[in-house]
Length: 140
Image 1 (cartoon, rainbow, N blue to C red):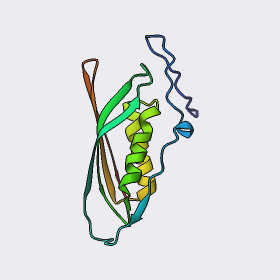
Image 2: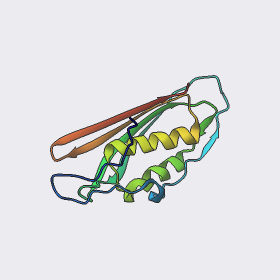
Image 3: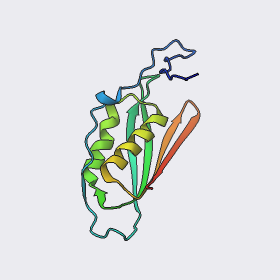
Image 4: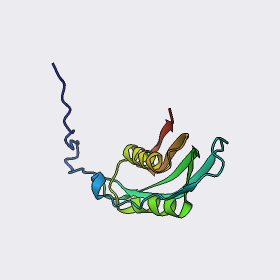
């Protein structure tokens, strides 16, 4: 018997219409790259982005976070201004904490093809709950 997946309905105890911004409507700024001139030499590059903002799909209020990204480049490095514009383009996106970290990871890997990435979203306390979401990628 085959199991088919269906999208989960936005069910909640508060009776709210909870919908995230669809991926194709996010209008995220593209990540630019430049050639890493020392392929084969592994270095770690750390970014701490202290002013991340997105919109909570439940409340429509902004969520704030510090995003920490550590990566080992393969043949490409991310260009910093495009990273800043990409991160800032989440300000009008309705997205859950757990999903935004996965979107950033997918987009970063797609743009840079790094050897590895560690990503952390350290979200500010909201309603007495602190949320930290982590994801990682390692090239095979």
